[in-house]
Length: 109
Image (cartoon, rainbow, N blue to C red; front, side):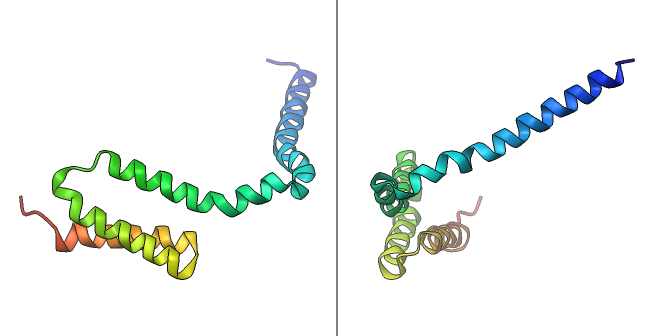
């Protein structure tokens, strides 16, 4: 059976490492708050992420799925241009795609 001092030491090391790993992002973020690069990326990244997701989605699209995918992509772009809300755009485009593939363009097996 392990010595209680060894167990307490192991727990103390685990607590210290866990606390340090959770505090590190906040400590590293503090000097970046005034950075012009971080502000630029914060303004541009939502659209960049959506473009990457669209390209990834369209990369392996099969010929039978062009219509629902294109309509969903158009809905996503339209929602984003209308409301400028990335969450609404992504969720709305996903909902349109699920609706179109499940109901409108559903194939009977």
